[in-house]
Image (cartoon, rainbow, N blue to C red):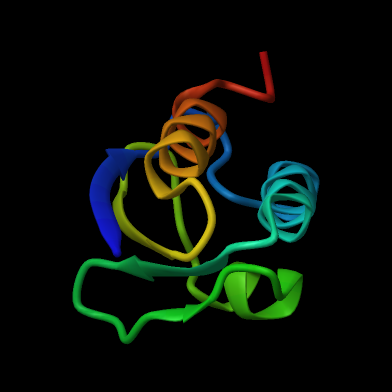
Amino acid sequence: MAERTVRIGSTHGLHARPAKLFTEAVVASGASVTIAKAGKSPVNAASILSVIAQGIDHGDEVTLTVDGGDEQAVLDSLVNLLSTDHDG
């Protein structure tokens, strides 16, 4: 299991478009991934509704946990995706 905390880069937070990109990448990885905003319980990162319900804004820190597959490579890819501004 691999875990890392990342700051959200999208100007408007993890709204529908970046959340869709993120959840699609999670599903494509084949790994079991959770995402948790500080102070909230981890949720299934493959579920766009669960991710959006976290209410993640620009600059918030989230913790990703990856279990299965090439965990470090999956984590690197997802961290890169979340730290990128998809609204710019």
